[in-house]
Length: 441
Image (tube, rainbow, N blue to C red; front, top):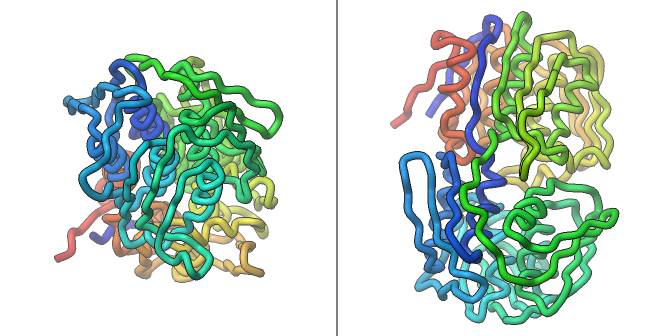
């Protein structure tokens, strides 16, 4: 699919965003091993969450799909069944890595398969701690020193409780170890290199698990989980990021996003945009298991941003769209320590630099993990490629709104991975003449 984006008039309106898929993954996996029924509502349309749902069904979890919600009956810690075939994770790294932690504690062997992009991503980062706990994780590329899907996991029960210091700042690595810790013989502790999103810890507590944090160390105690009933998911802050940047960059814009997750561990982009001079206000409406509320943004002149390596983990998913904001700012922005972007669905440093260069940006890579961007209006009038990556596609589409001439984004269908409704929502703010999509044979 091609997306054809014209220079935008002021963006105005109010949106509700799709449910947070990071929270959805965790609700499904914990619901599968809880005692009782868990309902997840509203149900996300993203392909990633469908993969996690299919995975727990493959482990024997009864699932009822309703119009706006999914209800599952948990099997308890001892109830999962050995799958009859491979569990296919598509391109969802969260599905695969978190499921690996869950499966490490099962008394059977299972296999996790992946799509072509996920099959290139590194998995040794989860295999090593799970091996320390007693599980065995094998995969492709093992002889070369890295590990890639498909993964074969030989689980054991109980696992050995460990204290593990993560080699990279990764919520997925942390979560895999904490989930495995539910099947361990004592307290399992993960010491983070830097703080990462805390959805797993919050969700574990919501299911009655004992979770403690001391500084950078997070600990979990093994024990039964109790289903919390209905979980109403907040809107996805990572999906909100594209509209926040669009409204900040397109002159005259004013946009309000309702019922968005306001978890402090996910507010890195809002903080970064505020440092750049964006006019953003947040209003908290609910402080229960996941805080949520409204975010409003108005267009304003932006200034350059210096992002330090220690800041990168808090905005790792939003870095592509933050690069777009930097093209609209006055001055030279510098993003340092962002090498983790190279091992996402695609090399996002390469895909974003290539795309923004075609749009006329003054952008360059220095070293392996630093990007510098000179602010200035983009020319547009060209075609860019998504590189098969949903965040690259949506970021370049937003960049096109602020360009001088129309832009075509090739391979735009990849947004279905996380936000299939993206172009429909963008049309609501920018108008149909501005945003068009064309299916390709």
